[in-house]
Image 1 (cartoon, helix red, strand yellow):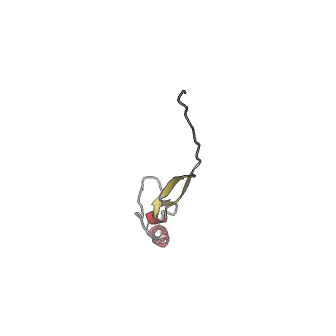
Image 2 (cartoon, rainbow, N blue to C red):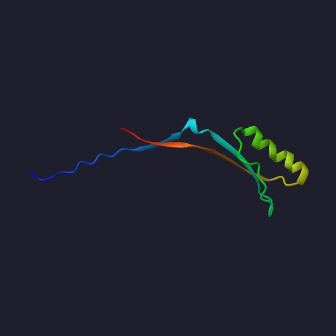
Image 3 (tube, rainbow, N blue to C red):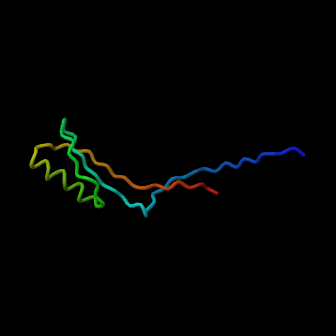
Length: 76
C-alpha cells in the first residue's frame, strides 16, 4: 500500500476580539504640524481634541483612526 495525503481545506475568518478593546486617535494633517491626540480608549476623548486644537491653532483638518484587535479562526 502506498502512502496517501489527505488535504482538508478550511476557510479562515477574522472577527473583532472584544478582550483587546478599541483605540481612538486623531492626527492633525496640516502640513508640517504632526500633532496628535494620542491613543484614547474613548471616542469622545480623541474627537474632542480636534475642535479644541482647531480653535487654538486654526488647524481644522484631522485624520481619525479607530483600531481594534482581531482574532483569526479556522472554520471546522
